[in-house]
Length: 115
Ligand SMILES: [Zn+2]
Image 1: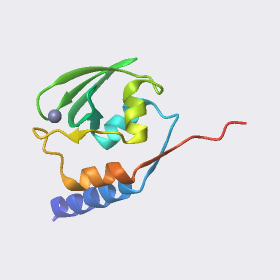
Image 2: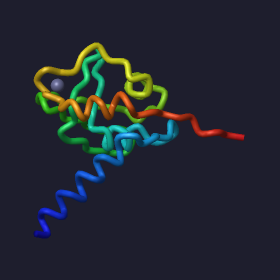
Image 3: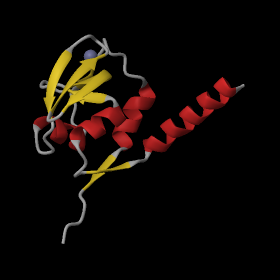
């Protein structure tokens, strides 16, 4: 019974993320950890299997078995790709579920107003 409830709660949480607005100033790793997606250099969108944060860098392991070293830079390539939702194609090997791609396309990144 408890297991079932846990599963429902988890599903509800996932639903919550769908229309979530991420603050642009948030650490890139926090965003990566939440959306579990990573855009590679050539614009292929990979699913993140594991992310290990070590200070200013993180090691991202994709579902297709790639290990990528990522720097925490909001203005870096990855941040830009993710913010603008540019992608050439989702990785075939990662098999990113449709709901995740949909979530990615509905996620908005907003810039915090700074006075
Ligand atoms: Zn992949």
